[in-house]
Image (cartoon, rainbow, N blue to C red; front, side, top):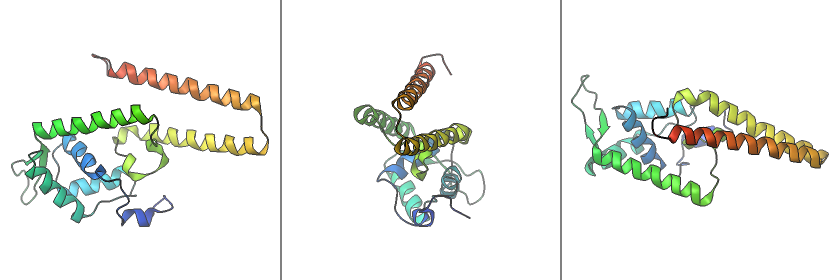
Length: 186
């Protein structure tokens, strides 16, 4: 499989993921539906467009740890030989704590790298968001193109216009996110 990211081969085979992120990712996947260890590895590879596939040596000990802590439980066998796990109520609370801490950090530090910059551990969103992520990649590319153009020929007017476009887009996206977070909205 060809890896689009310049460090793709290295990233697939190296512990290049922030500490604790795999745990968060696996909790999120178990929250979506019961899964086996191999299904988790395959789902992560799919959601990161092949850029990252955790090894069995990282997934299975993590599942055992989550089970020992009472965050996951094995569900009764539906297919012979396949063990699937789901979150317990304690596991859901643990995941909610992770989500809360992530939101606090985002508020405190303001900007974190957006999911569309191509780093695999940020692409943990559902497949249905792919179009939004791709549009974000195009926005980032357009920003770099504009910066390159401004480097060649600086223009106060172009800079002010671009700043206004970005501020308006950010405002509209924040309004949409706020509306989606209001009770009764979806």
